Image (cartoon, rainbow over all chains, first blue to last red; front, side, top):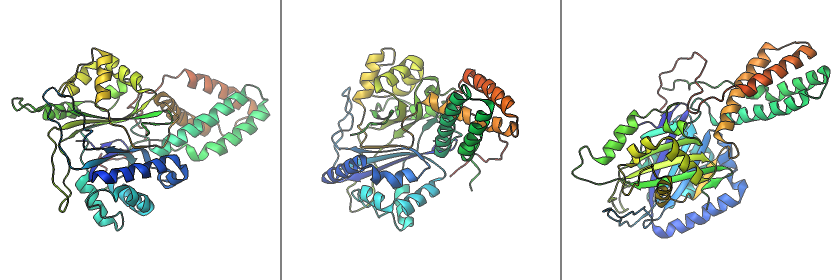
Length: 198
Length: 210
């Protein structure tokens, strides 16, 4: 079992839903996908690298024959996979504090969901419906989502400076270089191992 | 609905695991044993094959009962869940896995129902697609950069910090000359390997983060 690789935590959650409710949820996800301002809070939670919700209808579990018994289920299921930086507690706390309305909208269709506020029953619920990761890979284990965003900002600014360096005088370059340093100075934090959390 | 967000693909695969009472240990346990020994760094199969940002493999034993008054129900099969966040088009990504790490794929998915083996890439792609579940909502913090672009950017970020620190107060002509040399070195520097980028800082860690 390894939910953690470097600075990233892999969370897996599965919750049952009455089948008619999944259509409501699909509608809500459709709106969330197409009306980008609704994603603002999710984007602002800048410690999430990737996350996905997957509605799995009870009749759509992969069936391949070869002696496999077809599933006979009453519920559809909502799968949630997240890749985030920080600890489990920090993540659930932040979700509850910042995204409570959005989370309620998504999970209220799941059986026995207690609501994301207050946080204690919410944590108990997530702990109950979470299952552990057996193998977890990240291409950049020592970087957080913010490190990645910063690295791309530095790369983009450097490419721009490099283009100018080819055509300008030393004095013009010095001025452009100073502007470059000011532009990237907040994005030069070094990556490394995560601090110990007890 | 979206399996893709920008140029990143969110792949979700559920492969039914062979249920054979005669198998000792059981197939799901054999998968878990293999995964427990599989490297997660630069030697990971997902680092050796191109295009994976983050990926996980999970043996899902059953669905979870959340308590009364909901109904308790169980799956007939256990499933191997493969969740990957990868670059580009799905066929190309899966073909890359089959071409670069077929032995790992066979060792893992060989315990799953109907797995055809990775020696025939098209059969492998068809199998994975047969087990694929459509993503309903997919969020990617960065959705327009590939794995090599991101690894290069992280390398650049480090190098730029060092360059700035060591070139403070320098004369403009020398600064421009050394910047040009720096860029030439940076452009020819080998790309860091996926799964690596080991830290330089000497900080203490207990390795536990829960």
